[in-house]
Image 1 (cartoon, rainbow, N blue to C red):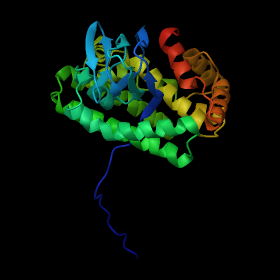
Image 2: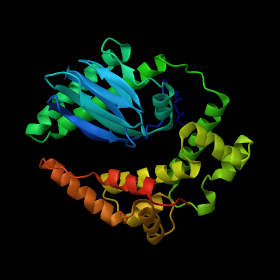
Image 3: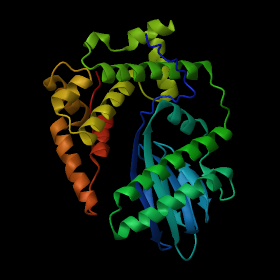
Length: 324
């Protein structure tokens, strides 16, 4: 009889299932009279000065930016900008969102907004920002090749890693009991979605809802809702809905699986049930989302631009639609 050889892990990494959106990345040169009105958005923003001087007002606090200075603006922060010198200025702006609990926790932990050019954070991000800047200027003249688009992805993740690393150095990494519980709740929710994705059709009652999580952590459902909302700024059910929505959108955009198959993979009994829920989340059907995504991809390949479907859907989802 042949003896089976033994095997042991020499190393292992956790699953990587990050939903990331990069929107509105641009470099702009403006004259001294240029201004941008007060506004807010649901994205994180890195605002990096390349030349000249400007003033940015964030949540009522004024910051003066010179060459190399960086502002890190978080979702929901009201901000506006004006020139501060006689010759205008040049800046580079990166807007992004990350649907990953550990990353968002670190991004929100440090509350500083302004980082001067000689700070560890500004200098630590400069290499990735330079790479993205040069790729952005190249894309302005002609569409990026597939290999250059992959370089954009690589630079973005390098930027994220550097950003989280630098922010973690500036803040205590010790989690409070409340943060620890909220992180456990998020992991339970993500594990539930992962189980649905791996095992296909799952009965509605077998999903991990608030009562199941509360029982596992030995606290009440009301405590689950309160703690999670205090730490993450959203309700657990909304977080679950966003996780399912992100996975549905990824499958619709990145695969050619039919919608029946996607519905089954996400634990819905029928295509009709999945389509109703998707439209309730986004305002459009899965078929409409897929068609819009394909058209957008084709236009971007030709160098044209139009609003990205995910941004439209998430706006509708966050602003208008009720949750289960």
